[in-house]
Image (tube, rainbow, N blue to C red; front, side, top):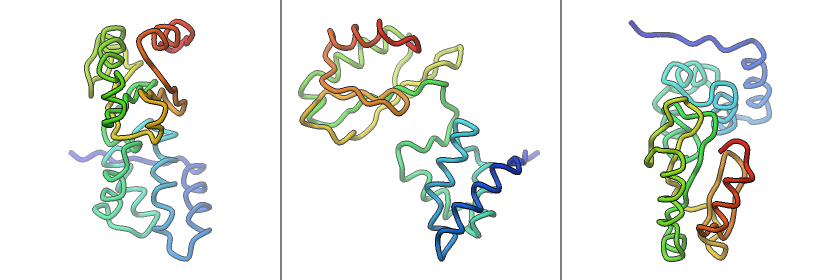
Length: 161
């Protein structure tokens, strides 16, 4: 049996408000997906269908947008999402060691979520800071020059990890 999702009236109003700024509602697709994710932490199939309906798009069209962007999650994620940059620059400058350290600390591998649902560890193609590699992003905060010492310092100073 297929589940359906009901957005709150506030969510619907917010989506409609965003879409009203464009001559074509579909132009608000990224902002809409980010909004859905803000309220639900990820974009389920049901939420995607409901959002597509509000934007006068087919679910396939909106899914094409959602799956193109690395920061739109189409599977459930933890409350804290840790992105490890795996670009060539980061890899050359120690990202693999950083990933091993954080993976051991959290007890999960790439693409996994901790049993308590707190953390998800994901790779990301590039965070656009190759001159400051290796780079790590936790939720919306980006950290630069993350070697093992910097990572241990970061992990000790953050309450979330």
